[in-house]
Image 1 (cartoon, rainbow, N blue to C red):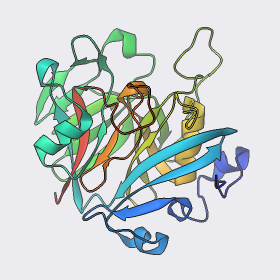
Image 2 (image 1 turned 45 degrees about the horizontal axis):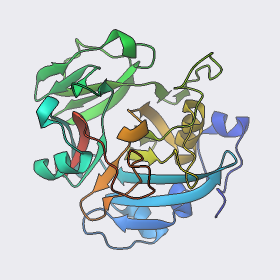
Image 3 (image 1 turned 30 degrees about the horizontal axis):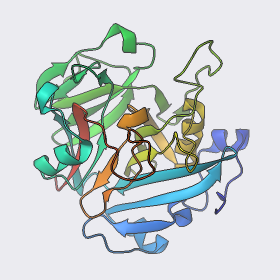
Length: 283
């Protein structure tokens, strides 16, 4: 497998400005509008692109899927469907008419109801749960004219839509770190499939999923995911729900990653979720 072009270490964490561009190392790059194959040079200029990178990272095989868009070309929306209305990420995106989407935040797997602050079309539909407070310390806030990824889960924020999640990995260029050696900790220091949303210094929005729980894809700890966010060049990054929920979908390419709930390394193991972060052409 191809190697990443940047050595990992303290210098990377401090700089957070990878050269060459992350897209240069991708295995496959496609135009988000029509699925056409792109070179790395053309992908850099495209308003919307998706792709995959399979590599050795942290001494393990990794499978990384991503979408990168210009926010002015693709609007952001939070889709909600609690209980019986919950569905797979791809199904919720197709119903909405989205061009791409990623699974959302933490939820009660029995009731299929959100356990973080969720606001949809101006109405609050989810509230923070005490059991999620140890990791939920950020949110994406969406207005009709833009969005922001911020530290803190502010339930009083004036916004059209919002999704609380966490932990926040990078906040306005400041890299956050969290202890990964807590006794009996199965979240921070254990490798799992992971999902994140972030922005880079050029203003592009990134949706990223890391596969895991498979001998072809080890997954990442929270610290390793932060290093990946730096490799991509993100200046703001928020961890979303991971594990079996981790799913990245595009209209031209279908499910890009390998959701793990079915125990196979394919695109058919999606989990029902009550919220999704979706992209639609135009604002």
